[in-house]
Amino acid sequence: MKKYLFFALAIAGMLSSCSNDDIVSDGGKGKFDSSELIPIKIGMGHSTTTRGTGTVGGFDNASDNKWVKQTVNVFMLHKDSMALAIFDSQDQGFNEVIYNNAPFYTPDGAQTGIATPLSDSIKYYPTQGRYDFWGYRLDDAEVETPVFTDDSLSINFKINGSQDVMVAKAVPTQADTTKLHAGGNDEADRAFSAFAARWGVQPNLDFRHLLTRLTFDVIPGGESTIDPVTPVIVDSIRVISPNQGTLTIAKVGDVRGEKQCIWWAKDAQEKLLTDTLSLMQRDTASVTTAANNLIKLIPDSLKGCGHMDNTDPQNPVFVPDTVRIGEALLVAPDVTSYKMILYLRQPSQMTLNSQDNTDIPYVYKDYIKLSDSSAFQKGYSYKVQIKLWGLTDIKISTTLGKWEEGETIVLKPEDVEDVE
Image (tube, rainbow, N blue to C red; front, side, top):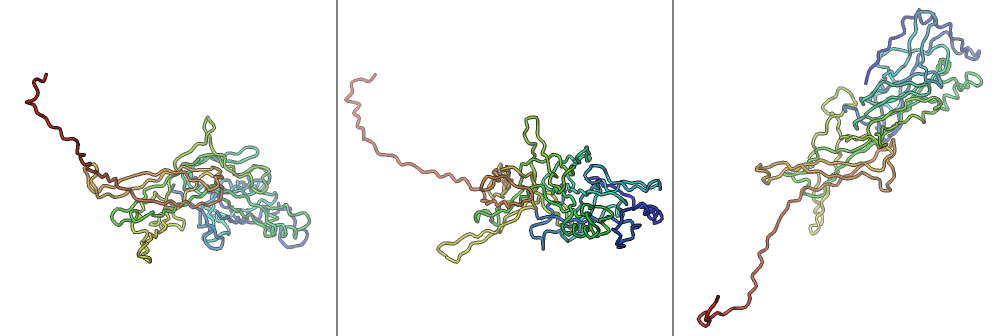
């Protein structure tokens, strides 16, 4: 995605020259010097759930549901409008858009924390006015330029199964409202602004997932699957899903971000546009960032993934190991089934096409469905368990049928006068 560079506010003299424009009072309480410009601090939170970076977060808020310095994009707009927030020094020679699709780093190793703009510049609230903060994450999906209309902000995108599409709007909490009431009567609607920031109320973008997450576990079906010489090898897992559409980032009148959603693209016949998405895996060889990029799935052999339990010698039992394949596939929600294509391979000790020890490729196809045939939901992670057996040799037996003994025929040719 494009990165945008934002310029830091110039010098302290310029900042102070703007300060007298701040006519928002603190209710006469003397708590704050109203001449101070207030820096914008954007908190980041996210709820439980290419070279994309794949899944963001996990299930347990206390352990694995943490940001790992991913990037998100932020817009700062005038409250209840699609107009970009601008810091204007009123004829003092300084005027700039504050956050327009601005990339931010999320916290590293925490579920909630202050985000850092990639430009590494501090932005300040305009001395008057109220503002909305909207965020989204499309990772490295193919995207177009965001489009503003009178009442909405949206962006066209195309994903490949490795991008976790997320959205957020900063909404004041009950604790924020309590703080703002301390600033004077009927001040609870002053978020977000320089006034609110003075009372300790800053925007927090609580990101939520808009896609469905599929993880894949393979369970060997028997000893032939894990044979040390001819084990089954998983080459690829692919799923057909809608993959392109329009993300609504912001909409006038959307108080809590409930209208942030995806409109999936359709063809002329009103059928959803789909593509085959391939499961990928973490690039464990790279340690440049905590959230390693995803790479093409490396073939995974099931060799030795199980054992025989001979506790009862008369009835030995095969005990398989469950094998997680790849990272996860992020697909469109609100569908009742996904077509899955499983590409496998198994070494052969037999001669095939005049070649010895040739790997034999084969394919399984199936549909991923829920037990009650309901639709898959956004923000939910589903585990797909696949039981696999190895190829079965074709063994043709031949049985020699015996001759049945018939009647003995006695001939006396000399007794016959003539035969025509």
